[in-house]
Image (tube, rainbow, N blue to C red):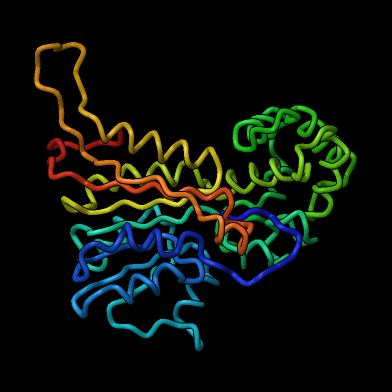
Length: 324
């Protein structure tokens, strides 16, 4: 995800070299880039692979898939393929391509700059456009549709839990009052104006719309559930020594990644059987990396990014593995 800055800019891949350096440890291996975006990470991964290496890319945004396959920016490399899909569905993508296990999985979570800077996508409160926010505009419910139908309590819950917004109840009341007046919210500018009137106190340097727009985007795209599904599947998808690299941009995402890696990086003791051997760790936590001062000064949208890296151990999963 990138922060919502006022001025559109050329897309810059966040933590480009740090992520690829951590991910690619076997040049002849098979890797998944679960969030292709504009392909910065994928292109650098391909430059590190031998002729025997392979990269499967995934993106739920049709525009990203088109960018990967069409025109001068398209990637014409026999080692590369891209699927239009959710990143949580990478095990199914692997199966379609005949891949049993991976040497590395990369996830760059959230919204890319081209998505934010296109008013037609509805992600930004800085630009007027339809209140959409879907990463895949061909599927699912838009933010406007949710706000036009959801109960007041559900709107407040979403804004509170996904936006960590303390004015959530007041925001929900204002949204419902507006739609009951016969003028449901349809445009990003309409929602931003309503939020400016309701959110009375502001954090320094933060627009009053920031938290609510974040909350709606997370809801519409099912982002946190998708992240949890993708992480859980990685334990079976990665080979021993395979790398998991995840870039997140806000505390809700990073907390999920941190908790997952921490849980599986330590031995598990069964309190019901205190003398039994502990279950060995499935992951080794390798690194937590933030952007350099130089990167942040050149790309303000990178300032909140966190890269976490873990390595799969050689411990086998239980015979019947279910999501923890």
